[in-house]
Image (cartoon, rainbow, N blue to C red; front, side, top):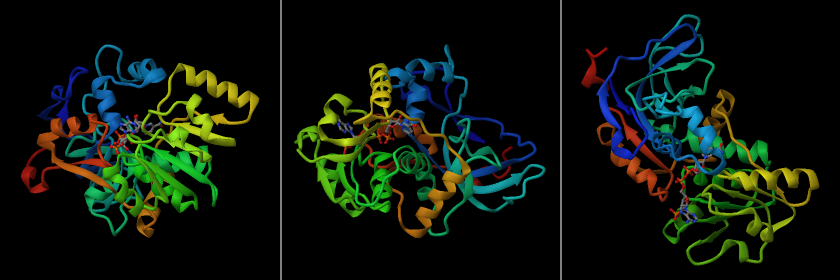
Length: 332
Ligand SMILES: NC(=O)c1ccc[n+]([C@@H]2O[C@H](COP(=O)([O-])OP(=O)(O)OC[C@H]3O[C@@H](n4cnc5c(N)ncnc54)[C@H](OP(=O)(O)O)[C@@H]3O)[C@@H](O)[C@H]2O)c1
């Protein structure tokens, strides 16, 4: 099978397309023939060893201190079940599934996933590209806005990086929970964000969002550009700042606010569970959220996809279309 492989951390062109053996599945595992994947900010961070702030050292240790442990990146996938291992009961060959690979490996034509992992039947109203575009951003936004800082109807929520891979779902999910949503992004993305439900839009290039005068119950920053010291100005007295990127100073500030109360800084990292993926599937099936695709690339052009992701100005997801199954029918 074809896979996007890299040996060493570096620029996008360290990634090369190679022929590799298909993963072998064991008991309780599902082999998926991928139709579409994505390049996420996580793939870029692991490829380039570009972990933000306080996460650099743990990120590098997890990825491999000297060279990457996982040579094929990619977490999101959508495709059809090719075969199943012993004792798999939830999935059968031919099922249309999507999800997140727990140990990367999704930049390949075949992916092995545990039956109990983040894999679910696709919503019937979505195609493979849309389904592949959902898990990373939508599961993150759901867990942050439902579990870490549960959004209540009527709350005022500001989403920073609202047009990015997580932000487009942050806007839709906060709106789904009944919030009044202010979306922060470049002006060219404002029409899209309003169509996703944003009540107000701010162009961060023209206005300092922390000096708007309005107060928020929650500021969810996915872009990594807002700092607690400034965000405090626009938080209500019991408001929460929930950033996706943070440094050492933020860890101390978060500890301080957890002890002394008042305006809070919360630092969290989400996992990828089957239950959360199914919740995202149900939101997409009901029309509460929709997938946003920035651009699509063939697997052979994945280096260009990485370059697009690294701009930090993609709108939603960068999708990778896998070669059609007939192209490798005899391949193993
Ligand atoms: N903690 C966790 O568990 C967790 C989970 C998932 C992801 N993450 C992290 O979350 C972050 C967001 O991921 P993503 O995929 O959403 O990123 P992304 O798609 O690259 O985000 C792009 C967004 O950032 C905005 N942006 C770019 N430069 C900006 C600036 N100078 N000021 C304000 N906004 C700016 C863009 O706005 P315009 O293009 O409209 O200008 C766009 O809305 C990443 O760092 C990722 O590693 C963390």
